[in-house]
Length: 238
Image (cartoon, rainbow, N blue to C red):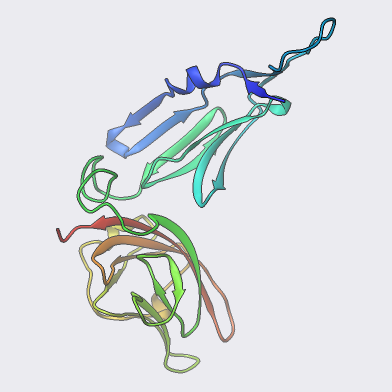
């Protein structure tokens, strides 16, 4: 049985992107004010179908196949979705989405699809790092020293650090965005006492990718666990 969401393909081709260059923000509207779902299979004589039609009822950002997707829900008529723009953080609002560019690079520049330095690993993600573990920001994983960029180092239960590994560099920013630390990268470790939820840490990985991560959680007690959301912008050394 085939079911279609009426008019979606044609309208999605003209998906409206309204950019505000000064604030690096993009407004993305849902493609339809309302949508229709109907059975399209041939029916026997004297049988018919009643299409379901609904107005836009909800918007949300949802992980689909490992990537954030923008979802517009039309009640029982179904939903339509599209991938969120790369290197942008999107939040749902009534009727659509507001997306903010994560880095200072213009479209087509370093770190953007088709531009120099296109990332080799996941361009964004979230990690939960237990105390004394290392993490690889090129590939978005927690594990051994091989390929690791940062070590959640524990000298003792009190002296805890984020320590760069394998030639990676890091810098502590503030709560605004990654621009607050991008020009301060070094091989110096950062003491845990300096880290606060909401703060950004900029990095250059051992493979040359630039990016930043935001601290989203830090457990109390001992051992501690650090939660981050990271964003890779690409290899800027080329």
